[in-house]
Length: 413
Image (cartoon, rainbow, N blue to C red; front, top):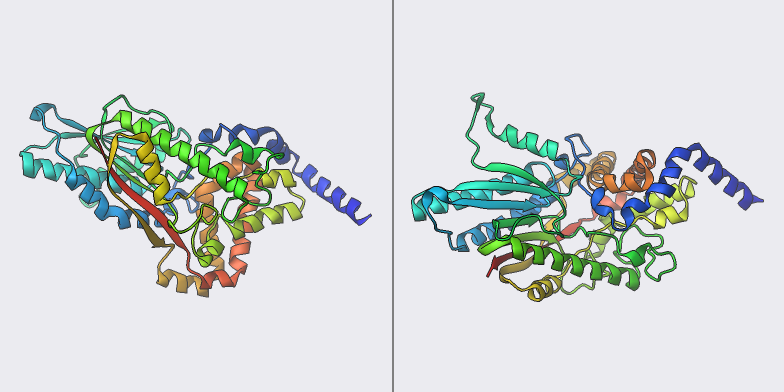
């Protein structure tokens, strides 16, 4: 009797949300397989839940890798041709929105410009290509580019130092003509997969990822499926760049990574990072809350998978070797802390603000795919449950979460 009553209550709750629930049943499959590229993007705009307002950790990773980026630029042999005809093409692949992509493009172009002026006594022209999936908020990005060309103190236009263009498309496919690019960067993007492996979406498969939104600590079959997809994706990326980057050009990559000593099932390393990372415990608890409240069923919960994989240095080296065409100048693993000690002490005093900040971080990275899976209303309920879980778990505030990254500079030979 109790079970029957509970089932009736769950049914009534789903009926009350019938438009949303129908969305799950009918539309979710459009992205979970090969259609991920249509919805995967960082949250656009500039509100509190936007990627532009929640990209401190990526910015820290970029700052940490900046010396390696500058060294890569210094190590390049300059391209020499008639001074009045030299134009250098720079691309940011997986650019998203916000100041990170603009600051990186400025760094690359300004460093190359100085080298040409000092070593060749002339200044080439620069083409800056900002590339991401079509679902990216290119409108916000190009408004930001226009804003950087205005001297707000003098209220007058400054000369923009490059010609900008947007290139929509997946970097796992060709984006440019052969030999078009002289320098390509891909920052904080290559850990996102092109698709969820098919076997992970098959309820009859041993790789069906039951009860988890991600793979850290997951079953071996699930992790292996992600690892295979990750290797296929990285090799496709490198093969495309081998065609697009001119010989003597440079490819600079910064991606989420894991320590060499850790197996693929341990994506995050230490216990505190695994407990506190937004893709793990609190995320799974939020999904379970929706299930317990009768707002979704088990299949809906189990069918959502975060398409991210943290590679090891060895996996990256293997992909580069198998692709050929690149000479690795530098490759190393680095760790960044999620936020400063001052910020952590501030949040210990105000856990509600901490929960809100972490929920906005998750919205910034996962809202588009969560909405494609659940619809707008239920996806927002998911983020609210996540926020409550994080705010109420005081033990999280005593832990420190580290993000691992792999930095690679490779010369096109």
